[in-house]
Structures are given as structure tokens and as C-alpha cells.
Image (tube, rainbow, N blue to C red; front, side, top):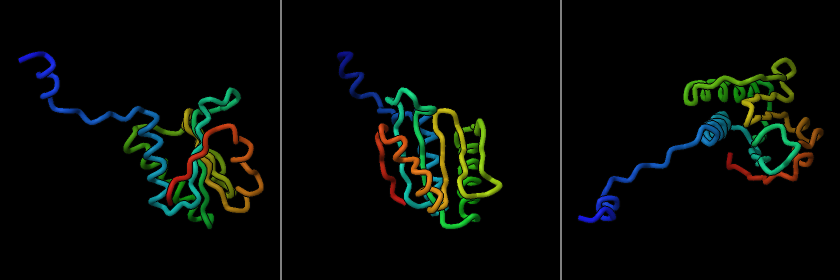
Amino acid sequence: MTSLQVLSERPKRSARLTRNSKLFKTIINAIRNKKGENIISLDLRKVDEAVADFFIVCEASSNVQIKAIADAIQDEVKEKCVESPYRHEGYQALQWVLIDYVNIVVHIFQPETRKFYKLEEMWNDGEQVEHES
């Protein structure tokens, strides 16, 4: 048996997720599970001025839903990725909650607040991807 045959008969391993991709997918799923809407991600890796590799932006229709999404993200990331956010802000007013995982920053907005700050326009140099709710 040649070495090529041995390699081809070896069981295939499933691709392992990198730390960032696992974190990214966990965050998107947590948002979906709590019915977050208008979910987009911005890939900022090619933007020199960027403060993170990715922004994930979504909106919620109430303060209660914003808190539920933010809590779900932190709980699921802690459970599945064993990570806590570097910092989080906005829990007092619940108009815009920011959760900072250093390489990935999550922004959860009330619709009016999202329209006012136009975060996607400000970072339009990054590749934007829409994610189904």
C-alpha cells in the first residue's frame, strides 16, 4: 500500500473552528435565538483604523429584548467559548448596548438609535454581510 493510499483511506476530520469564528457563530446564534432583527456583520480586518476585526450589529424592538439579547450573548459565549467580554456598556439606558470581545464587538440597538448613529455607514469600508434573523 502506498503512502497516498494510506492517507486517502484515513478518516476525515471535521474542520475545527478558529477561536474567532466560533465566537462569531455563537454570537449570531444567540441573537437569532432571542429574535434579534436586521443582523449584519462588518468585516473590518482590511480597515486600518478599525478597533476590531468584526462588528456584529442588530436591533431589538424593546428594552427588555435588548437586555435579553445581550444577556444571551454573554451566557452562550461564556458556556461555549469560555470567554467573558473585555467590557460592556449601555445596560442603563438600553438604547444601544455594546459588548466588546476585543476582536469582535457587538452592537445591539433600538431601531431609532441605530438610524441616528448610522454605524454601518461610518464603517462602510468593511465588507457587510446580512444574516437571517
